[in-house]
Each structure stands twice: as C-alpha cells, then as structure tokens.
Image (cartoon, rainbow, N blue to C red; front, side, top):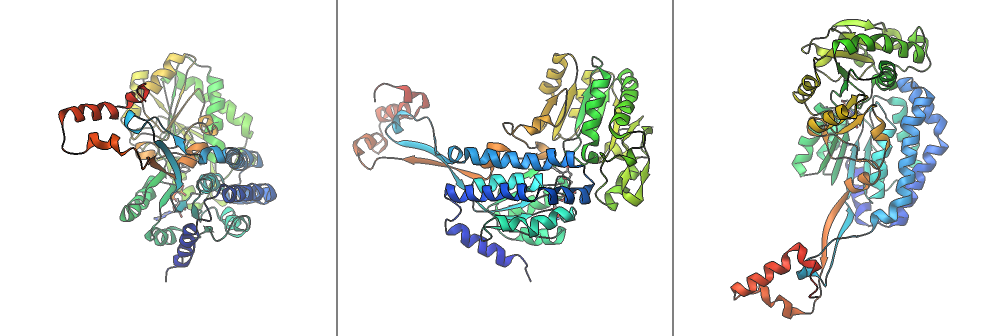
Length: 468
Ligand code: NAD
C-alpha cells in the first residue's frame, strides 16, 4: 500500500491542467502563505518553543521574519521574475526573438529538517510556488509541534489540489522518493542527501541538496577578543548550536586562544547568566538521541567553559573545549550543538591548510582587524558562503545565494535564486517563417565562401554588426 500514490497523481493532474501557471494564482498562494504566518504567529512561536525551547526572539528573527520577508520579496517581484529574459543575438538571428523562459518544473518534492523547521520549509516553498510548481512538502517528523501545524493549518491557506503536506520519517520519505518528481529540494544531513540523490537518479530528477558539515572559523591575532567572543558565542549558541551555518570550530594561535577563553566566558555569562540552564534565552537539544551524541562529544579534549548537561530536560551548557586532537569525534563530525572547540595553529598558512584538507564547508568565517587577512582566507579557500568578521549574516541577504559546495551541497536558493532554482530555464528562439533566401548559406552544396559567411554570422560579437 503506497500512502502517497493518490496525492502524487492528483498533483500531477493539477499541474497538467495549467492551474499553477498564471501569475495571479501564484500570487494568491503567496498571499495565503503570508496570512498563514500572520494569523498563526503565536501558535508557531509556541510550537517552536515546544520543539526546541527556542526563545520568541530567536524564533521571530530566524523563522518567522525570514519566511515573511521571502514571501514579501516574491510578491513584489513575481511579475518581473516571470518575464521572459531577452538575450544577446548574433547576426544569423538578428531578426529573431531570443529569450529564456522560466517555466515551472512541474511536481516538486521538498524535504526538510528539524532545526529551523518553519524557515527551512517555507522559504523553499515560496520559491516553488513563485515558479509555478505543484509541491509535496515533507517536513521533519522530529520537530513534531511545527510538523503538526504545517500538516493541519498550512493547507487551509493554500490550494489543496496543488500543495500537499506529507507526513512521516525515513521510511515514509523513502516511499515518497520512489515516485517520479520533476525536482527534489532536500535540506538535511549529507548521509540522507546521498539517499535522496540516489533515488532521484533513478528518474533523472534534478536536485538541490542543502547539506551540512563543519564550518571553520579563523580568528587572527590582530582582533579585539571580546568583540570576536561576543559574535562567536551568539553564533555558536543561537538555537542551542543546532544551526547548519554555525561556526563549528575555531582556528587560532595559542596566544589568541588564551585571550578568547575568558572573553567567551564573559560573553556566555552576559548572554545566559551564571547558570545558563535557568536562562530563558537558551534552548534545548531536539531529542534524546542528539543529546546522547552531544554528551559523548563533551569528553573530547579538555572543557574550558561549561561542560554540564542534564538529560532530564535535554540541556547541554554552552561549552568551549580546548586541547582537542583532530582525530577526536568532536573534530570528525558536524557538532550541531552548543559546543565550540578551539583548535590552535601556528600561522594563517597552517589554518588555511587545515581548512583545505577537509570537505568544503557550507560556511566559512574569518575574524581580523586586518582586512588583508580576511581577504586571504576568502581567496585561498572554498565554501558555500563566506562572512568576514561575523557569521550567518551573509544568509540574511536574499540578494546572496544560499547553498553549499562539494560535500556541503549543490544548488542554492533565497530571493530570486529560489525562483530560478525551481524554474527550468528554457532556451527559446522564435524565427520568421519567411526570408528563406538568407538560409541558402547553410544548405548544401557546401562552399568555402558560404562557410566563411556562416561562421561570421554565428559569432556572438557579430550582433553589433551594422549590416542589418
Ligand atoms: P536528516 O538528514 O536526518 O533529515 C532530513 C529529512 O530527511 C527529514 O525530513 C527526515 O524525515 C528525512 N530522512 C531522515 N532519514 C532519512 C532516510 N534514511 N531516508 C529518507 N529520508 C530520511 O537531517 P536532520 O537531522 O533533520 O537535520 C540536521 C542536518 O541538516 C545537519 O547535517 C545540518 O547541517 C543539515 N542542515 C542543513 C541546512 C542547509 O541549509 N544547508 C539547514 C539545516 C540543516
């Protein structure tokens, strides 16, 4: 028995009917998303608090406001994004119309994780709707309270013949992946990313994979340790460290490490008080399984700050580790929790070498008062995104693409990049049925003279020719 067969068939029929293509339909669905966010804001904040004990402040900025601004941006730009994009022509096509049409792929599957369960579900959905697709949305089964709202409330704001929320965990997702989709957008772990890509390959379905990994953060000796520590602590402990773009580990000299540890302690106490377990601003680990995994990582190296945990309420203290070996588990896997190892290196070159010996990360950060140092890190490494003297902030700009490279993923989204991701870029050339004489040059019998004329006419720069 396949629980998704009927839904997939219905959505395919809806797409074939052409219903999702007009701008007015897309705008109406986006308006629906906007109302969903506004009318259910408190319910969403409560659900995020239940799932992750996320503070309303963090939920507002990282889940609700980001989703809302993506909806607003898409609504403001929908018509412009949908317009055919004229392209330069050569002499041979000078009288024709050449353009890129952004057409919807058709039926799209979006599979999402639990750590930002609203943002990571709605932001891709905005792009898929704006591009005119039908969508099966598969939120994470682990962030249960948000999943419930997405399943029970969201569909009331959308055309249910075109958008379906599918429920379940790994087994259900595998079943879903057996179906043929026209595009799959997956956010989650590299391990499951491979499962998704393997399933997609069976149908030659294109994919975007938004994955994770270990994001390095280089801290130069030439910096103000307290400023760096404030920013690092906020980035690492935001959402209890369960953030794909959080700095995963720091690389710095032994001297900078000695200055960073008290500054980090200072920042942690300022943010979360003397006992962070009582702070309303610090969340909790999503599940017992993740808690146990993180607790295991606390025994790597030496605890310089924090290190406490309480299984009863899935609490792990904001922690800083030092004297960690590269071979220890905390440096082998994505931490995805409130633990920050400080690794020491002797020079910028050694830091860059350390970074380049590993998989390309989703994000890379460098802190220095010397802009040349930041620029060197940028120039000599590769990552999905980069931010100098801060973290995350690059992904708050919808004018920048968000996505990974290498093991941290493929493809990107946010803002117009989302619209483009969910659109097939169709190459179109509309020629005149007349003026057949011009084509004589390309027909046999082939002659050297005709070849010369044709090659000239096909050069792109020949479009500036004043002959026509
Ligand atoms: P996950 O890969 O375990 O799960 C993601 C989704 O896949 C869920 O909907 C889940 O139901 C489904 N799934 C899980 N196991 C599956 C299987 N065996 N077969 C088919 N489907 C399966 O990821 P997670 O634990 O929910 O999220 C954490 C990971 O996501 C981290 O690696 C993190 O870095 C990454 N992440 C990446 C981004 C990004 O934008 N690049 C954002 C957030 C999280």
